[in-house]
Length: 398
Image 1: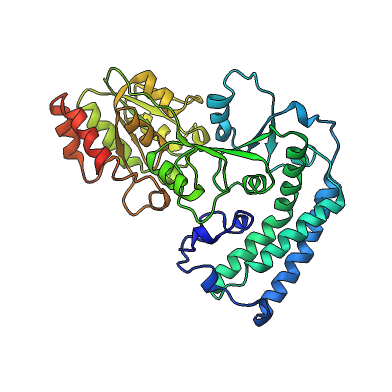
Image 2: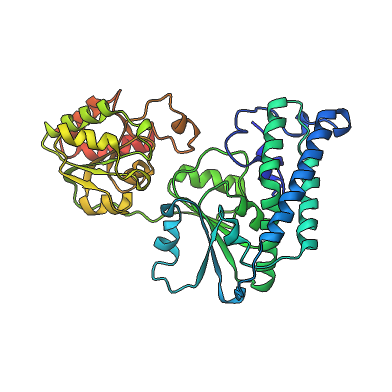
């Protein structure tokens, strides 16, 4: 793996995301001088020209809205999907008393209207990041070289703009805080390098990474994620979201559907529902916010009796607290991790050879009962109420 500890915070934006995980060489030992590569000269020239056009376009796009930055301490990254930033409203600003600004990271007209930045400052930021790119882009491995070039081409102008914006915000308001929900947010990389406190509120389980921003604080779902971030960030301001154990287990099972039908199997779901129906369980299906009207669920409903379908924005732990099930079911759902912490036995429908399972830090398969390999453990658990605690202990320890 690329050596995480050798990637400085101001370089991390070049290596953010999962596509660099497959490379197993150290950055320094895998680099050579730019003067030995004509291809890299060409790539650097293309990136310089394209990046300049993009940064000048962002300058022209700017509009002055008259926002008083001193009135807002909270800046909340908002992506395309509304449910991504709900942990801010749930854990940080639940009563709405704290004034905040949404930063729509995929909407240039939105984030270029926060503060008008001079052409000089934008070009200075761009040149600084262009030099960083040149110093960290010449890899012997051609695929890694191309990945870094593609990342630079796609990101350098917007990243440079974010660097200027957060520097301006933090200069005008020392109490300003950015809240990020993706570990690889480009805005997060920029904020942490420009004197702005940045808090990561994990939307789901954390994926394995080469580089993430130097977050000031973070909140995550699993102890494994917590340990990994403490080791990487070098401080202990990494907390687990509060989850209390349920008080009364009921004969309910909650099924967490996936965000995409292609990741689910109709027959497996149908078999599971029949399995628990024969054992007199009440079946509750909770859809994913991004897939509220799943075709698979529609087909299941025609041949299986499902007692309740939850399509609203109720999150996993709210459903667990409301129905207090003995079991939950999912694929790579964060709800499986929340279930175990709440004292509910999670059942995993993902197979061991699964991309999402592979990239997660949290050991989804080990911390759940495998539907394919451990059905006998479900029956053993059901034979005696005392076995419920024993099964939870097994999942927590293995």
